[in-house]
Structures are given as C-alpha cells and as structure tokens.
Image (cartoon, rainbow, N blue to C red; front, side, top):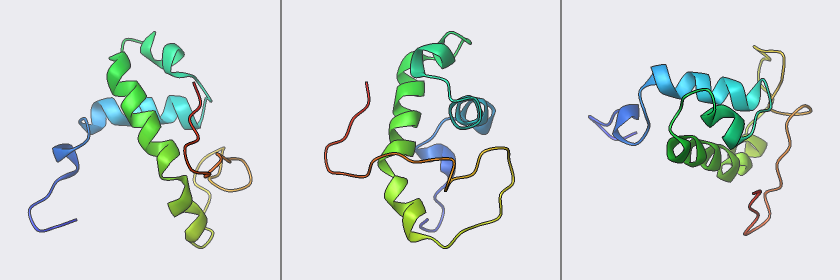
Amino acid sequence: MRHGQKDTDSLPPYEVLDPILEAFIEEDLSVDQIAARGFDRATVGRILDLVKRNEYKRRQAPPGVRVSGRAFGRDWRYPITSGYRSR
C-alpha cells in the first residue's frame, strides 16, 4: 500500500467485509445466499470477484499457517485461467 492509503479506500468497512468473506470461504455460500443475509448484492459480488481474481497470488506464496477450518490450499481451488468466471 502506498503512504496514507487505507483498506477502506477500495473495500467496505471490516464490519461488512469480514462476514461476507467468512460466509464465502468458510461456509461456501453463493452470492445470492450471502445477499439473503442482508448484504448488498453488488458489494457481495464485487468482493467475491476480487477473491477469485486474486487466486494466483495465493499460489505464488509459500504455504501458511492454517487458522480456520478451511485452508487456502488443499481445501480451496479456483481456476486461474484467463477469463474464468463462475456465475
């Protein structure tokens, strides 16, 4: 991040972001299922798209410590081919 930049410059506040990510990663819920919990559907779609588009970054990193029931590794795989979009 550049000097003075904050996460909230491009992402929703953590009070919104964290439950969306938890529902998607830990509970494997879809955009519609997460939006049904009261979150803005456009925000949910944008956040999940960011997670999926950045899968290649997780594959470049060394294995990390598993801090939840589902790891970004063996338990988590999204295709990283050009143009992949799950609808």
